Image (cartoon, rainbow over all chains, first blue to last red; front, side):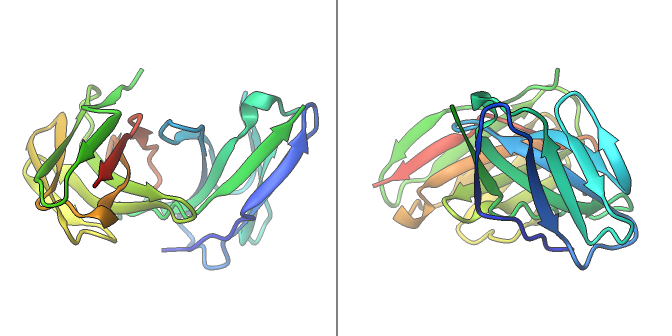
Length: 111
Length: 114
């Protein structure tokens, strides 16, 4: 299983773009990169997933360089409600149930 | 929308008690998971089940057992609760056993063992 490394915490201000980088040096060929978001007193929820290059949805963008040893979650124009913990995971499509959530990145958005 | 519900949001139990945490999902998912979450440690997998009556240990199974008698229900059992099991417990389900599949989480049960 590929382990991931993320910053423990980040601060931002409303309206700014926030980029959270995740390192996964041992990512396997069939691994995907998935990000979850967790608000206080709630379970995590899936926000975005990608394999390579760039993925964008209504919540975020995910940038993955060619070597796939890292990835960057980009949140455009954050608001106070984006204050949460963000988890980066890597996992395969060819079986194997385990995912490692790690400690995540605590993002605090200030007014 | 997938819904994963947990029987209690908050629970207080005494040391040595047998504790049951219940989880129900309504999307006919094959896989269900139990995690515990502690400050600074993220989520750690306790057990998971890939089919009715089937289970596998996760990273920290000691002191816990599980039961899955029906597809939609997955129970976590603390045979004899101890204070170091005070934690947030999260249940999740996913359509299949692939690590790439999205997991759907319940709201969590905050258990305090005194």
